[in-house]
Image 1 (cartoon, rainbow, N blue to C red):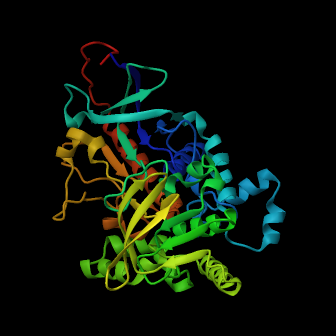
Image 2 (image 1 turned 30 degrees about the vertical axis):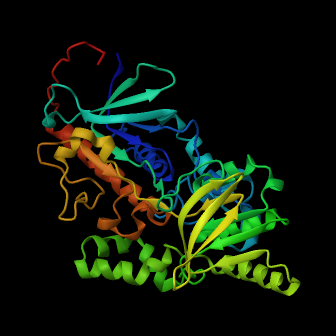
Image 3 (image 1 turned 45 degrees about the vertical axis):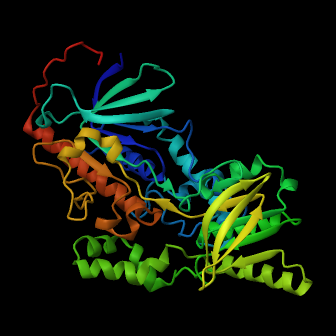
Length: 449
């Protein structure tokens, strides 16, 4: 029998990466500002501790966004949770300014995120995985309560929590080339550093990296520098890396106002956003990294070693184990010539699939409205459109690219996005309080499900 908590939360966040961390801060700052009382919130994270792309904290790898696009600044420039406040608390503000750089290392930004989450840790439970979300048994949708079933180490039989709103932010799902499965020698970039550190570097004589984006290029550079004895192959479906457009006019696509232009735009407007501005974020690489890799390849040519090789217009069509090696089948060039490459490790920096909460929502799917393409219809405040009788709010931080555009799951708009969700939850709470309490029937079984 699952143990049920007596408290009914105003909101429960599922997943605690940067997006829901930013939301937790927005709700905390709403309360400390003295507005309308505290919103009761709880955040559940299945990892045992906070972590954000830990396996891509490569040496000297930098953020691709300004430090000002932190968890809070675009929503509240005076917030004590800003990156600048973190630098001040860490005693590094003067040194950071002396760097004259808008882009901190990924490692330092991760330190900032850990610092921020420690300040709201009283609202977070780690090692807690939500297995289902549903209506309270016997309750009607109008009673505005959802029941979350949770598995954690403290309660082997499970735990039950009730809430009036949920914010789903479970993150992206690693994507592998079709027909390719991960094993001890075939890795996805999301697990790279962990896998690499558990492997004897001397055993890596030939390695291959698949992908044309920032992660692929950074891993290729890392392996080339870390393994001076090894051949490094970069398998690229395009004709070389494409540079990320981070020029000022193009970067306006990440401005908060661009979300309105996309959300309220016509189908033609939305299509134009993607056609003209995909190169700000998708399958593109920073100019500095591209030049670093080209310089290394050129130096190889000068020395006559050719240790770094780029296989352009090449796709992985199959992977199999042959003895101690991994044999990769490749289609190469415009004629799709088939060749094989034996390597000691294959790293697939092949991106992610979008967040898909369907399995988590279960029977609640019947209340969620979808568009003609089968995607969730989403309100401007990131709330899933539901049948009128369902009074609970289901918010998504991710999986809303079709409605809110490129920034719907990116750090670039994280502070404003979380602030809008917080404002929506606060407004719904105020409306419920003004309308008076809803009678809640007694449940059979008391505190147990």
